[in-house]
Image (cartoon, rainbow, N blue to C red):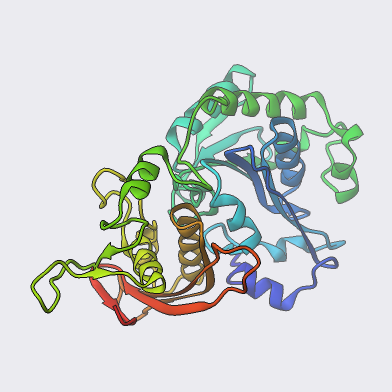
Length: 373
């Protein structure tokens, strides 16, 4: 049956928060992963409880969208490739691994494992099988491999999607019932619930131990910090002047430079937005990873993903820049082209009101539009 709503945005405009649905989220700064359930509550019970328990036990981040009606919660189902709650993406942009919990049909006790994180998926499958659970590869319609699937929208663009059959989920409760009242009480959980979650937690712990480092977040990497602190005329760089980019000569035939702080900030922001990670020699992580959203012109989530990617990359590479607005426009008539208009301001002086500088408009793939540089 087709979804009643095309996105979370569409659903939120027609349903009542706290009456029809509930959203819960916990962002754990010390964690690099998340357990999520976008079809929780009465939609695909008890995925909320599974995600919540695993997140709490492993001190990981957590998100759940729950249908809380007395009936017909399945009408609140929004497919994983179109679920665009900003609260979820604020968590995913800071995570390296994701376990997305779902419910499938069927009376047999089986788990369908999918998603783009093949390493973690293999570890989860192996642990579940060792614990006596039946695991099979997910069929195409629920394989979780689409790049737009929320499980694959973390920093590594790869997560794991677990589809648990109804028969298996019913075995997690002594009564075999999946009513909202039953699943809300931990006392109703069976040994199977804890055996299953232990297997998943063990797989994550071995694949992503505390010593494993994913992409750095919140601060520059060591290599980038050396480059930026030592540069006074390069790009990216910090100091009293910067080379103009694109590279050019001034009217006297000398290397063109910028000395105005606002223009320097604007140019650096332009570089962050318009650079695809891997292009900058010596600092391959530099840039904004928005390329995977360029060829989805009709996808309502694409502008949100671009906005979150820009905010995340600017926070990492330009922590003293305050973003006052991001306006991504994906062109329906020009697939592969997106305008990203970003307004930035210098927030490096505490206690001083942020003054907006000029906007930067970038068309990834080559063309830079707007600004006076």
